[in-house]
Length: 251
Image (cartoon, rainbow, N blue to C red):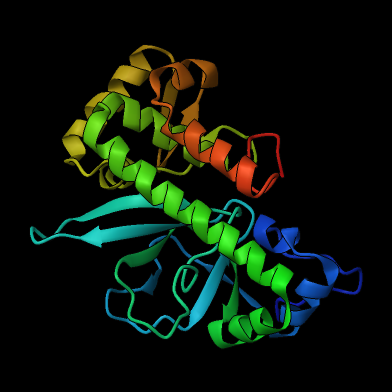
């Protein structure tokens, strides 16, 4: 990538699987309008009520998250989005107010595209429009699955699910930059609850803790403790957008 986020001389695309899913002609429609930049953890992309005017594509191990503010002042995290997708103006046509808070969960490279340019490209290319419609379907599936998960699964199951989900986007090194505070936000519980679950997982040899991160020592054991919600989402991605959802050994 050039310093402006456009393809370099070798035509290399950003490390975002949704952008890499586009055919050459479709990517050429939006490439001149892409910009890139480093975002830090907890950077705010949108607050509720903000005009949604830009699509943000996490690259590599970067992650964004959707959070729903509640009347008690807490934000409840609903889904994580990594290099399999994008946030902002995907389901709607943009220039509408954001409903949730969208923040950077794990910092790193993000590529940005004005929604007006994306919508213009969609009017030109049916195949580009189809890819983003399919991704919107996958994004909604994640939201539906998250709602069901929060209603019926235990804190232990959901903790294991979130750790595995984050690990799959960190290039398979089993180090997840997730603090107890961040984990409690993902779970929608107090920090003490999240800490107790992590202590249990440590005692079972599933994870270790480091300052600001978790190290997964037994991925298979952790998966056995997780609910199947993440697998359901991955299976839907494979049906709708094959090869886009990342795995430890995947793209």
